Structures are given as C-alpha cells and as structure tokens.
Image (cartoon, rainbow, N blue to C red; front, top):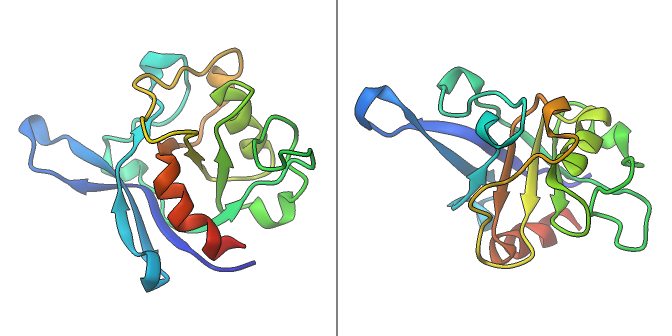
Length: 158
C-alpha cells in the first residue's frame, strides 16, 4: 500500500463569524501532490448521521487507501469492499458512480474506514450530497473532491 497522508476531512479555523471552521481536504504528503483541494461534504441536513465537520474536534487525519469492491468498475464502492484489511483504520477513496453516496460510504464504514473521500465524476461538485437509504447508518466523515483533483491523487495510490 502506497502511503498518502491525507489531512482529509480536516478543519482549519477560518475566522468566520461564530467561530465556525472551514472543512478542508488537504494532502500532506507525498510532496508531489501536497495541496488543499476544493470539496463538498455530507451533513445531517442531507439525510446523513455523520459528525458535524465544522467542529474542529471532528477532524481526522490519516492514510488514504483506494476502496476496491471487486466488480468490473472496482472502486465505485457499490458492493462490499474486498480490501477491508487495507481500509480498516484509514480513509477510503471511492469514485462517484451508479449507486447512492450513502451506500458507498456505508460499505467503506463496514470495511473499517474512519472517513470517505469520494471522487466526483466531473469537476462540478454535488451541492447537496444526499445520503439516500443508507446515509443515516453512516457515522464517519464523508467528503467529495472533483474528478480532476482525484486524477492528481490516484496515480500515487497505484
């Protein structure tokens, strides 16, 4: 497993009114892809049971691991992840595709992931990431970055 340390789903105090933080997806290493990436994230308002990521105590930082579901598309996360030994205790990277966001996140959570980084299928991020039927069963942070940002990160995982 190649190591990408992702300060993903991490917060940096933004100095906004009322002391709210800003949700930041930041790759810390390797240096070749170290950057802060634009994102959208799951909230309780959109049928999720995820932690409030505007609270700094809910931030996570860990290694990013590609989630594999064993299907032809392989990293959509629409089926149970087959690499749970690698995923457990880390942040799962899964691609947007044919099934609801909540299903993808629940499959990652069931594999032991502490967070989910979804890669969009375009450069427009979903305004409201709806949890679908499984979203209320997900209690780990879920964020999404653009397809072009994912294309920067993915080669380092391969």
